[in-house]
Image (tube, rainbow, N blue to C red; front, side, top):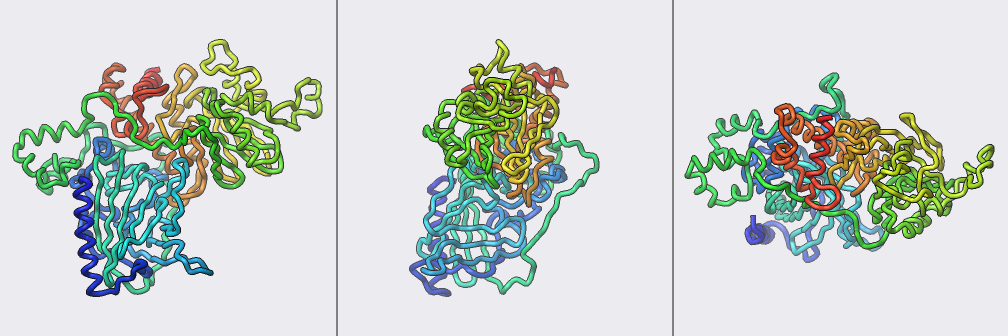
Length: 610
């Protein structure tokens, strides 16, 4: 839908709402009161496509992109048997398709009575939602996403207009049609008497080619006697299901697509959705059945051509400054010097995980001093790559480790001088070798290593566990779990901005990467995939279990596609031409820079062939 069409639709709704105001409710220049209980009355669009509804293959009327269509065609309902998919929440605006009621109330300043926020509690499947009305800014791009997102609102006459960002990946429809985590939403709540028109417009650069507008009606109802809680705990639905199994359909092999088309006598081209399916001119394209059938079949597989680049927002500010984001407990995330840096503070020296690229190390040290008044005591490296160890030498020189200056260690002249640098032994082996891919000064090499599966410490009053993840992106990956704060630092095993840098020459493999992601999920806890264990990725925004789940699913699905082609004898060039990652490229792909989509697919292919 074009901007003009959207404005015309909104204008029609506004006129209707204004007329209704004159008939049923007095206009208030400061806005309208939405407090009370509201329930779905009628859906003008997607009628019957509410919670757990929507037939597989019904994507018509949604302006989905190629990536959105291919993602839906790969989706299998069996994915809902996976523990991490069983208690997911509903995103804005899909939550308005959910069952039950909404309770709305206001939060006002106790002294001035100025309106601070409007609160919403759905009956099910999403935490409380806050619409901030006090003019506060939206969080930075590296902040966490939630099901409800971060919303700010303002009254425009008799309309409450709401702008929402920072939304998790969720649903357009409950049949695999996904709204990406890059979507933003504009909503208009228009009350007229005991009814309210709800009008939303979703802009999703990944899964949509045009904005997606929807309308529905809500009706004001008496106080709801039902419970406002809906507990949900995941469980093992299929006993013994392998952790690296994520059911999906290969290109062109969706088993239920024709069933939907035949049952409803819908042209396949129309069922597959896209911007053209929302315009009346589309009917003329169906007149030539042969051309329509050919066009539809071509849309069941990726179009020929080069891989598409990511349309996602880069969460790194790229402003030459270090930004500090409190995570939870006594753990913080530092953003700005290439890879993310984690800092744990307390009564002892600061414990730092990764040191960034080293371009802004002085500012990194200054930022750490705003968090902790103690010297840096430990620096843990999650891998050998330069964007995570580039600042080692400077952070080492800025620190002190009192524990290393006692007992027999005093025989070493430099015992206790500088922070202790800790990593898996393979990191030290590779960066100290002449053939290393990440040369750094010897002063930045790890001074303490481990070889077993786990290294543990008690630091700043908190249990800290360091787990080796063999043959993930390299043979020396570690993840770090701050147990009381419940924060996991993943390094490059999980990136919210790109495909994982699987360094086959340094021992990385797609199988090890998937195993590492599942190891992370074995340690996470959340409620409806909200809150709980926080995840600091190697690059990108703060996340939790849900984003790691989606990343794991992606890796399994791409592995399955590549493996299927290898089993048919496909060469690397044939795998690249098949665009096996086409439904993910507009979110994670790149055609330039140090790690392209082609390099990633080659790494998957090579490691599977080995």
